[in-house]
Length: 195
Image 1 (cartoon, rainbow, N blue to C red):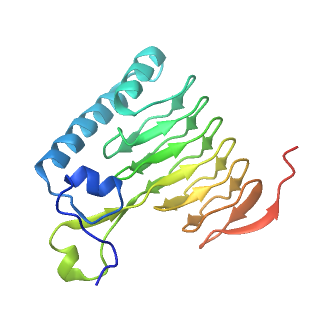
Image 2: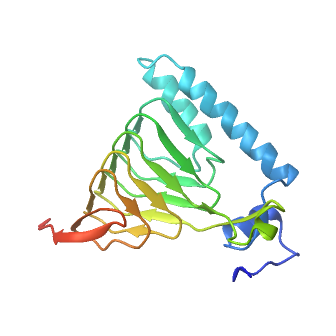
Image 3: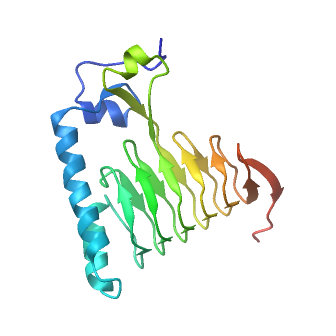
């Protein structure tokens, strides 16, 4: 059986945010996702040169977003309200953030095209998985991180400040600060002198 516990006294969103099994088909969660998906649709439909309107919608999508955000369209997320970022965030085209748990992004983070951040996970046992239960683990990205194109960052991962993740990586374990790491699975290749 899945080792993740389940507390019936918590709401489904509380279970998701605490790492417990939760019912993704819960009506309140569906309502929250639809609201976010409508906002993402609106954001992705804005004329790219209308920067003021883009920032206005981003502030409605994200829990919090720092100054000077640039998120190229299209951009997709599940809830939005579980995403927080610092200043000078740059996300290139076609980013997907499945924020069933918290996604925390530091200052001066660069994210290349076609990257995905996946907090959601599903039980290995199909008998549990087929009931609609899933779990989520948070993702944390430190300051001054650069994530290369076509990278997948999985739930439960922390990427340390000053690190660079090479293109095409699958990040399933924590990455320490100030390193170059890449591969599938992503591994530290060398230290970076960020002094």
